[in-house]
Image (cartoon, rainbow, N blue to C red; front, top):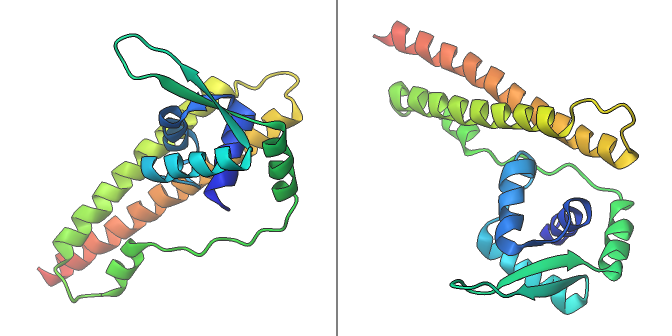
Length: 184
């Protein structure tokens, strides 16, 4: 998936926003399956504007720089719809923590245990945030729209992703604690 489609999807589903707010949306709502830095988002916004897929609106602010709010255009919606029906392949996993574990006993186990505990806490925090978001945004409406149901599916995938990480970290922490006990 390209960053441009993630931006267009966010603008199409959640409405107009500034680049700053867009990065915040990414961090809060889709970070479990997509991330982007401020720099990447602003660069892509300029490209999407050049293509006519989004349009900016400058909002004057007193005592602060003007705010630019972006909206998806009809052309942007058409491009997003074209992209949405194309086949996609799973993205390869690139996880440095797995390489660290593969190193076996080349490094002391205590720092690895600390990293696993840190990662466990990060994933637990993300899981708690996503579950809170689920109860706030999807409190089981009587007649959800198709868009709501599909959006909820993406949130459920994020919850499962973080749940798997939390469970795996707990297993890995236990294993490394046992290895430390055996070596000590």
